Image 1 (cartoon, helix red, strand yellow):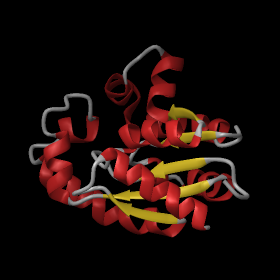
Image 2 (cartoon, rainbow, N blue to C red):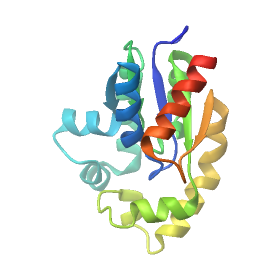
Image 3 (cartoon, rainbow, N blue to C red):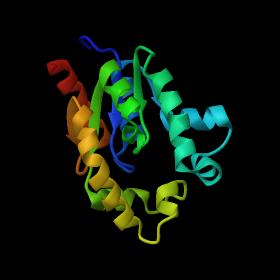
Image 4 (cartoon, rainbow, N blue to C red):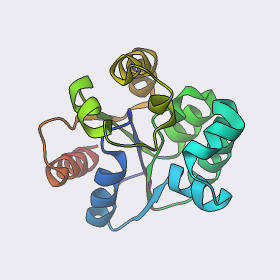
Length: 173
């Protein structure tokens, strides 16, 4: 990898950031880190519980602190939470400290990939998860694109093929 030594994955929930991130880290021989998992490990509490107790604002503060720290490491593939890019400082850290890959996915894929997941607080609080996902996409898509060095669609591709496409684009850059 030329220049930047980190790869940061952004995108909506259900895009495959964690799954693809693990595969990508393996191919690139880098350490894989998931910001949500890091928050859970540090607090000893699941994300949905943090949302319940501290609200989204409390969670976003924790997330900002973790992303500020993790993006200073070298040689990592970082999967961020879907809403991490809503915080301007996070966008600055991500864009300035690594290669940002936006994993783009369709609303249909998001609905399919998240429908049985009971640990997504923004969806659990919704009477209409599909409408919630659509609304989040409308608010966040431009922010993902704003900081992305690479955009890769995850819809019809296998985990390995998406990871290989990312590697090819990194090597081109």
